[in-house]
Image (cartoon, rainbow, N blue to C red; front, side):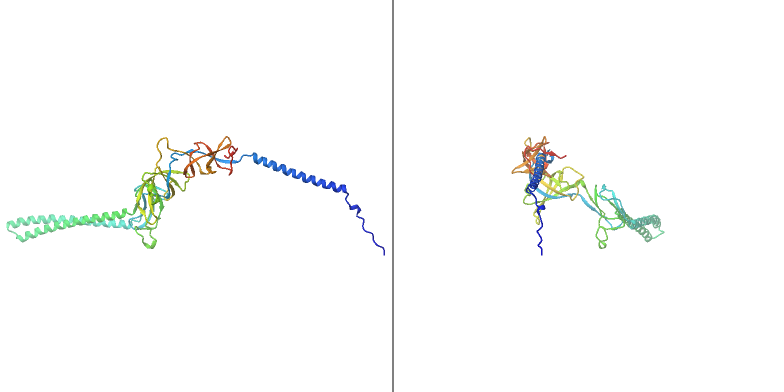
Length: 405
């Protein structure tokens, strides 16, 4: 048997020169790619370092009395001194409602009417009874005139001896009796007039009027419902028609811990900020300190008066107040300026960054508390200075910035 010869692989062998050239090509490609990455990173770094960070700014403004020291903080609610739930004095069915919530009403203005048909019937009956009694008096007066005439004639007959003394006495008695009946009937007329006035009052009570000027904050009854001055009918009878608030009587009521009530006195200036308008400070003063403590809460109630009226202030709004020390007098009174609290940074001490000619300047400041969402700066800033409110967490003194508009 003949043996087969091994296959010839010589044509598949790569020459050493070709192998070395291929390695050199791959190295060149890798080197080129690395160079491109280095150039891209360098370009990105150049762009990042050369671009100015974007910032938001605000302008410092004057704050009159900003330097007043806050002695005590408290929270409470806006409450009216004059607030009335208007109800009917009689029980009846509502047949007319002439107001809506939010409407300003005047004293004596008609708000609603009740069904007065029964009351008018009672009034007509009282008037008829009075007229009948007055007619009875007229009849008695006619009878009295005749009785007096008979009495005079009987006296003449007795004098002439034609009649007895008994007949004269009977005539005298008839006159006296009629006078007594007239007096009693006149008293009945007075009582009838009183009943007429009572019935008229019941008719008038079917008209519900506003007791004072104010704004309707609650509409409590509708046409067709029954109303009564007392709760009745298993909860199906209304006890009120409307709730009216005198907006000129709004005040702030707060509870102050009795341990700090010595810091509060009537007439003391107060800084008030409504929860609904945190950037709006309202000038107020302490009106009175209620001379009674709540033993359960260990607090004393304080009422604070608004110095200016504003339609934005509504009953039952939440409010935060700061009781202030008396404002210093003369040129030494520290007024300060106001900036947003976000503009103040803590770098071991309080600082802000001013923006001047497109660059920031680090400035140390002295604070005097807060006023709503603003910080009071007593030293280090002037009114009109532009400060950074939002921007990078780290800023360098003299760094250029781009201001967002």
